[in-house]
Each structure stands twice: as structure tokens, then as C-alpha cells.
Length: 67
Image 1 (spheres, rainbow, N blue to C red):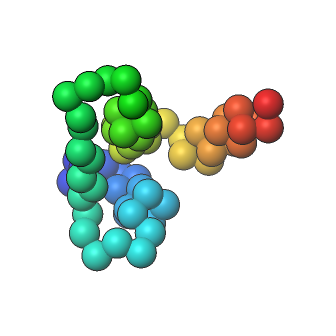
Image 2: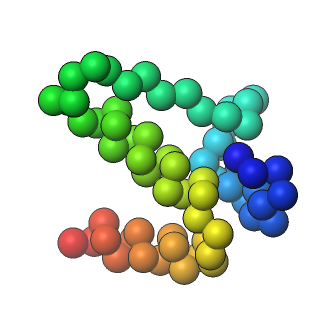
């Protein structure tokens, strides 16, 4: 996570809730037939690197999950 990110503390609170570390590990299999791990990695990367309004992103996610 970018140490200069002004939203770093918010991201840690949201995405690493309950973790004692400020990093996350993913195990990616050689076979991409099971894409759940890869999807989780891409989602994690998208949220951590997002530099816009986190509240707006959260609202968009809620709308997506309503469908």
C-alpha cells in the first residue's frame, strides 16, 4: 500500500479489519480454471490503488450488489 496515500488509514480500517498486518497475501494457482483466487486478487488491487472518493466507490459497490 502506498505510504503516501492520504486514504491509507481508511483503507487499512476497511480492507484489513482485524488484521495485525498492513499487507495481504494471495495464492494464485497455475491453473486459471478456478478463478476465485484471481478475482479476489484483482478486487483487492483495485480497491487499494483506488485514489478517488471511497464513499462514492462504496455506493457504487452497493448498487452493483443489489442487482
